Length: 223
Image 1 (cartoon, helix red, strand yellow):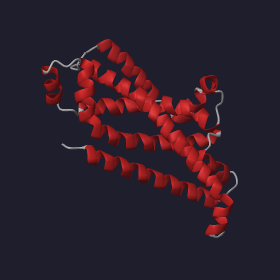
Image 2 (spheres, helix red, strand yellow):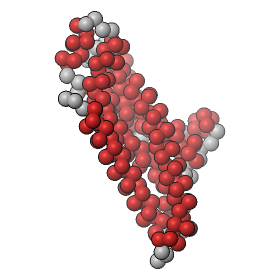
Image 3 (cartoon, one colour):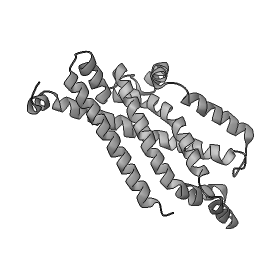
């Protein structure tokens, strides 16, 4: 078994690059997914029966699309949208090539998380804003989203960890990152030490993400 110094000399730069690619895929795709998913989640909440602006048909259509997108396994989605990905970003491999399918996969997940977080907001907060004459956008911005923020932040940790798993899966098709390293070196070349280290690094990333989001949620939760 190689010493730690020998291992780092041989694979250190490779693993460092893999961590960088993984974090880039993770945060870029999750940020875009949250922009799109928050809009969808708010729409689903306000158009639901008993919502601020009930619209049964529109809610059912958007809800069906969201559920359908959520039901597609990521590896299948990754392959299915390759033509669209190539047309959009010019490639289907590397960090750039995996961001579109990651966004498509994470957005409906985020939408349902946001919808659920908004549903947890006490009705009193909404009624207080409405009693002051606030418009629907104002109610959303001043009452709904601030009250739901601790729950939303906790949901961010779940989303990040899920997307982190997707980035590892994407390594199977040359997306780069730790998943790609684990497959190329740990699986194809039987470098068990590389496989073990990539798994450890992924576990550490999960723990850091979970702890950071819990800390932020606890800091901003004044209930």
